[in-house]
Structures are given as C-alpha cells and as structure tokens.
Length: 333
Image 1 (cartoon, rainbow, N blue to C red):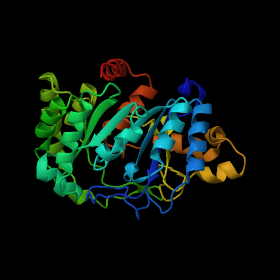
Image 2 (cartoon, rainbow, N blue to C red):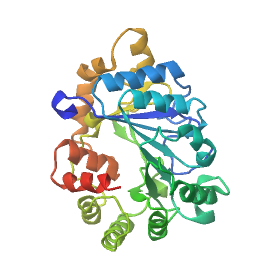
Image 3 (cartoon, rainbow, N blue to C red):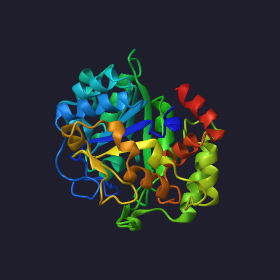
C-alpha cells in the first residue's frame, strides 16, 4: 500500500545520539555529520509517531546512539504502538535487563548488536562485561510469554575476523535470528562518497569468504537471516553494484535532532520534524516535496550501501520474488 501511494513504509528514528559505547566502526556517534547534537522532546516524538501512523507507515525502528539512555523510552514506544506501528528496537544491550520491565510488551522485535563473543565483543564496544549481560538477558528472555522476536546484528570488520561462526553459534543458543552486515565505511556528503573508516573494512576476498561461510551455516541450520540471494550477490561481487536502491523511497530516516536525512547528501537534511509540527504541516506533506522525490530518483543509481537491510528492502519495494520466501522466514520467528 505504501509503495502504491509513493510513501515509505518504515520510519527509522535515531532517538538519541548519546551512546555509552565507543565502537570504532560506528558512523552514527555524536559529533558525526549523521548525529548532530540535541534531541527531540517527548511531545515531538509522540507527534512524529502519530503522524507516521496517520501517513500509513507500518513500522518504526528505534535506535541511536543507545536508545535505552532515553528515560522516556517506554512512553515513546507505547505511543508508537498506539499509532499502529510495529516496533523494532535496536540496542547494545548494556541496560536491557535493567530497563526491560518498563519496555516489556511494547517491543515487537528486539535487535541486539553482537560482533563477537566474550571479552572480544566487550573490547570492540568499550564496555567490559557487556557480553555477560547479553547472555544473561537472552536466557531470561527465553521463557518470557511477551518475548519479542529476538534478532542479532553482527557487523563484520577487520576488528572481528572469524567472528561469524562464533556469533552464529550464540544465535542458535539464544534462539535468535542473525543478520551479518559488512561494515559501512562512509556516507555521501555534498553528493560525494566519503570513506573515513575504510581502513577498518574487510577486503573483497574476505567478504567473499564471509558470504560463502554464511551460506554454509545457513544450509547447516544456523539461523542466518541474510537471504541466499543477497549472500550469493556478495560472494560474486563484494561491491554489490548490481542492485537498484529503493531504500530512499521505502524508509524515512529521522535523526536525534529531528532532521530528515537525505541519504544522498547527509550534510543537507530535507526538513526537520519539529519545524513541520510548528508550521502545522503533516509528516505526509514531506513525501510530495521536490527534495524527497529527488532523493529517491538519485538513490536509484547509487550502490554505496552494502548491507542486507538496504539491498533486501530495495528488493521488497520492487516486489522481487525472492522476498516472499524471506518474509515467510521472518514470520516463522
């Protein structure tokens, strides 16, 4: 329905730029072009979620920064549920056990970031003891009757070579689905690619090896959720230059300060949701603007993003047959 109306179906909201971690691979830390200072207050976020529901959007992905640092997060997630949105929450998990009693029942899908096991993961995140907290929380969640769909997200980089097999074993032990993503090295500023983190990325040959291993693990019954089509594409062409990006049409990304992200020019936001509210404009009014339409047209020829989220979202938007099987696989979780 969103596709037919020319509107995105997903709201991706960075509720805060603050984070208690210090991941070297992160593009979204406070101070970067993608994470300007300041946060929307509770009332504006509630308005944003209500507007997303009225615009016909289907889900909100809440992340950051570390979203559990926002004290009003339970109120925000409840507002999203009341707006009819499917709620996905992404967290590093440090505060998950402490805050779960407040969040329980308001989260449909919970994504925990996990880049390795034990102390190796703790070092990457700059949070000693983090893995132990995650393992204890996953065990406690197993028998919760309000347990959300549990997913793990692993970013592969030069910092965690060989981690995929180890993390896949943890995903199976925790009864969680697992996505792995090649790390993103930069964004498009002023329309030109920036690769400030390129030195941390895996080589093309290493990405081919990771794709081959993921296909092997998937065939062996490990809960790898990257589609076989994506993995084969990554194995054949690690630059992933053969897809047409539709993510700019399917997903609306709003930063912590309310800026509406232009993925083709991250230094030049399309609008600010707080300003839309002050002006008495609806969120839906954004989707007919020249900036929004231009971004979608430009993005169709861009293959800067290499993660399965963008590639598979693009295939879903184009009604690619491979995504029917993927949707059934996700529904089974």
